[in-house]
Length: 212
Ligand SMILES: [Zn+2]
Image (cartoon, rainbow, N blue to C red; front, top):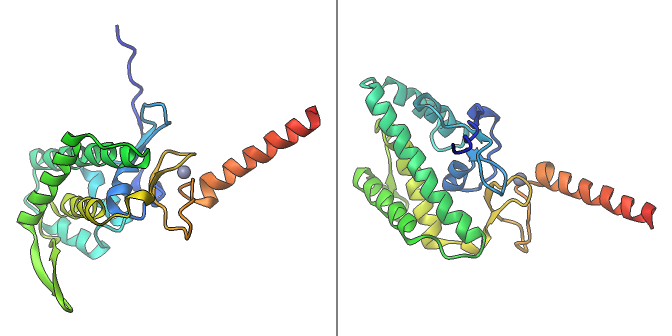
């Protein structure tokens, strides 16, 4: 018998650290685990988790969340489809951006799926005049608003970069956009993983010195 995969711990969205710097990377980080595979935590295991996650990650506003809630015509089938589509988008985005963070070429199939997700999103978009140009906009009345905005964020990052700044935290494996001046950040955030890593290094050095 195959060893059973441990069920990931469901972590409420509001406990998630939002450090990706891009909605698509934050979606990837809604599930995480050690570098060597497996999943420790997952904040998107049920359809009812989608809206709280999206608000917490800044994909939709609290007001838009109310509007989505009032959208009414929700059925458990439609909910399951929404969750499946978002989780699928997360898998593809993770495959692509984790590869890019490792300096590798992403899987062409995952790239294709991300492109298709954006094409679907564009089909549902409205065009809104912003100063001197038009931008896509997704109304909160659309059931697909969360995944459409995330798919667009992923596509924009792929098209415009900076892909050399997409990194995977050396501590917690989260994906993030390195916005430091010299692009040398190794940790998602200095307060969390960075401090821990420095502390570990300090303890190791002390131990090495006292052993010498
Ligand atoms: Zn980290």
